[in-house]
Length: 500
Figure 1 (tube, rainbow, N blue to C red):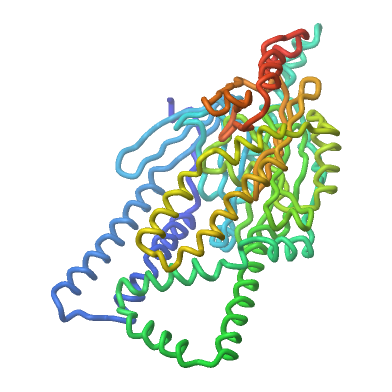
Figure 2: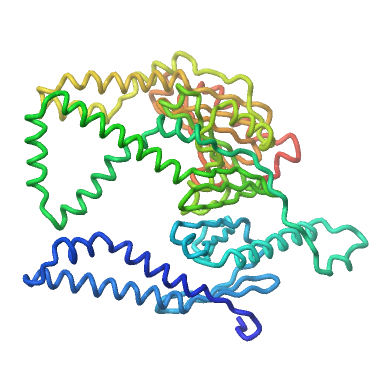
């Protein structure tokens, strides 16, 4: 790497301030407890603890300073170069044509300081598959995205050159960024309904538990718990009911606030050959997935949201980074099924959904009921041995287990429609999975001794991407053999081409 021939850029100085603020935020609770609420400098242990916290805080700040000081990046026409490291400098380079997508993230502190975080993803499965610019000005972010758009355009032009235009391709190309097309935007009403039909209404309990446990590590709260317990014992039914109702209402409000902060201003857009998801109020994020990298589509329905016909849609993308896979794969977090299908059929028409799905035979229900549930047996054994007075709760436990098996039998569907395979699996949460033969890398058929007696088996479909697999259980053996035969026989030349 010749540093003299490149124009090197540093991250803005306010990024250092941002990193120091993040360090202080991570130490906020211990600092408040040790230096404000319980400022004890008399005991030896208290002095050692506080000095240790301050030294660790100073070391972390010093590390952030050297990390900011050493970080530099530069670009030429083909490559991006990175110099990174806190105590030891590391140099690496990445060809621009390998960068498949750019994800931008703007947490509240970033937006407050007027910078954004960019993540460049090559969609490869390695430690050096991506890199971050953790804090650049918006105009610099736009410049980098324009450079990548130019590289993608040039790559497309050189991939299929036209005869007689070899000289023209050497001239610099003046291109425009692809226009954005809005595919879907969440409304306020949808976010409110989704908040009421999700477990986020109970968000107050883990939040309160985390805060209480953090405080209890430094301040003994046993006396407070005893006081609350005495009040509950001696309080009237009306008072307890009002307390429970207040906690429930507070939980609903917290759940709504969380969903609004996370999914406010949600937009699903198409920009050229890639789909883009933007969301968030305080923490604004934008992530892209190339259409050619989409391997499958998943539609998820939770038990409560099925009553309201609300679904969530995810994309299975090849090589998506582990740290952003959940955020980048969800393109519709909670919408009505009809609207979701309209978006999928209109803008993701490379996948065709089947009109009719096959049900499992009745023998599949018997094998589900006969299959041993070891978790239920272990819990039943523990309760009957140690807590026999509460044995009647086992009726509810086994009702849930058997009900789950019945639901699994009733909801499981499958269909092979031309070159597409569609699966519908699950019990309390139902997942619909759709992919096609060119995107399937492997099909595995397994059969247990119990399944062999009923002539059924399990089929596992694997595609490229993170968590890119789907399992359907207890389908007839002849259907599984037909799927294997369908997958192994390529009668059309295009079937042997794997997209992406």
